[in-house]
Image (cartoon, protein in one colour):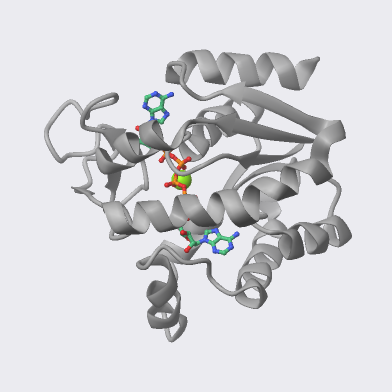
Length: 204
Ligand code: AP5
Ligand code: MG
């Protein structure tokens, strides 16, 4: 099963992809996570884009994605979380592999900004929490691996607005391309309810 999760910042792509990938025993590939974990000479270049809320150039993004999906853990399938984000990336993906379903998680901008402003991420394992909606048991400590929780550099009001603007302008239009395999889920529900709906609709 090969899935794409698309939605605005804070809609819960990462949160839901972690749950669904476990349930379906497929890999969770977040291009944002791949970029945040990048090391070596590319780190500075990549950070200059992500910290400002801008898209990393397609050439590099596609290269990283192509290398990732051929790894052995992807042989049963994967969830692409945050890829593709524009028409050029979607067209290239078409040539590389066949996607079974595209899950769009909707959320209005006001809620998106609220959720992102209160997100905490784990430095060690990437788990995601929320000081309001999904707090960790111990302040600033990851429930899963006891790692330290931090606030992403791009999770501040100016960058959030820029990321949402780019989402509406460049990413949303690609949904048209996937209209025959598109499943739309209301992201304003609680985390478990959304996961349940995704699983049900995938099986239909
Ligand atoms: P990326 O890491 O993908 O960030 P994003 O797209 O901005 O999306 P987010 O991670 O902010 O939101 P999410 O939907 O995953 O929400 P989450 O589950 O965490 O990309 C970062 C950057 O990398 C990009 O800006 C770009 O620079 C670069 N990049 C990545 N891919 C690229 C590409 N293809 N091309 C070019 N550049 C690329 O949830 C958010 C919060 O809400 C959490 O606190 C969570 O606990 C909470 N929450 C989640 N669901 C619920 C719920 N149902 N109810 C209540 N709270 C909830
Ligand atoms: Mg995410």
